[in-house]
Image (cartoon, rainbow, N blue to C red):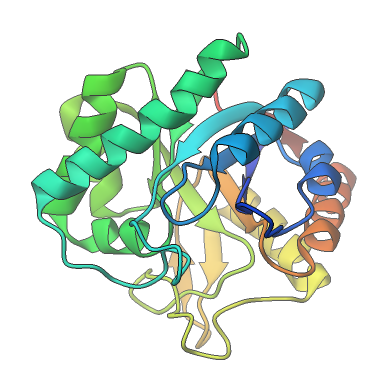
Length: 254
């Protein structure tokens, strides 16, 4: 049996008069999309428009909640209590769900964004708050988190289906954390490197860290960031390379 993987992308991250990424071009190459819920990016009209695109291509959709930080695109750490994180995440899931319900679509998963995602990967209290918000909203939702992280452990502990995620266009440190974006090597732009990395990760469960360490990491879904200037080239090359290696791409299943 050929190996299978979900390929996801963070989309719907423009707001107001500001466009970010080329969602319409990227959408056909992924199987799941994480839609910005309005706090780090996105707005009501953008959520609706992104859902319409996802419906057109029959792609699974999820909520992408982040810190309330439009200026920093949700990538700056914030000091919030677990209760505040719970409230923030629950609010944003509800926003995206409202539009999916109106469009007659299903909400499949929740994936935190940026600094919230990275902080919850290490902080179990924040991870528990996110998992609780997801579980109380709908225990059928899949919680997406960094492979091996506290967010995955928190989701499993509360009884959620979880999806361990790997990032194709991001470098890793030796401890399995993502290389901070302040480091010029944090983002990988080479499409051939990204495509080769995808095949090795899926086939062998191994990804090479920034300094050359071999990290063992079983993953359910792979992400390419939609705000990268070459996101379309990365997505299209990965799909082509996976097909060449008889690896099937399909959305997560609940």
